[in-house]
Image (cartoon, rainbow, N blue to C red; front, side, top):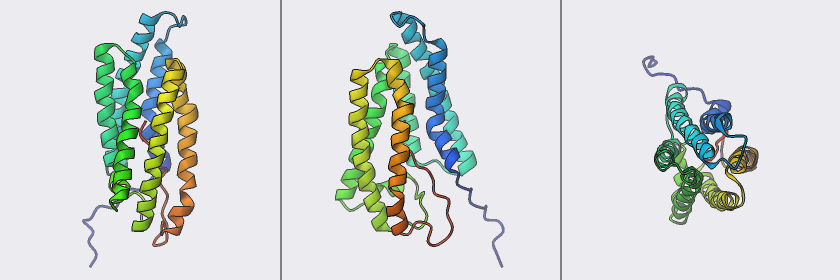
Length: 217
């Protein structure tokens, strides 16, 4: 006799995961561009545009959290932590009227995840498995371990890259780089891991749609 009361698992959707990960940042970019002054020397209007964009960013991030729970049936610890930091640093940006807080937020997220994953790897614990809530069905423990190491080094590289761009670029160009540089790099890195994951058991037990996992924005 089958158990008909057990709810069917939510279907994974790579595109939905991408929308949840990058949708709030897109909202931030659109709102900022809408309110940004044509005269870049108008620092007061520039800061106000950043503040308005940040407010929209916070709201969109919270909506993305709810959509993840509603459509995917779960909220990964990685998404939960990144949303909490968006709210925290976004609140600081609005309170102090200073865009630097929203710029250093990605660096802090990347550093935290890099330290956690690399320390876990050295201790023999694949923490990425718990951060992603075991998103890759069938992946072996060895696969999770190697993947945790790779993502740890990748997060460390993103932290350095974000700080270099933050120091070298004006705010608008830095924000554009979040889309036109960080996103392609993340897709490239994710797909570079697929051969490893396939060798380590991903999708062997059952046909599985691979989640396109992206780093927090």
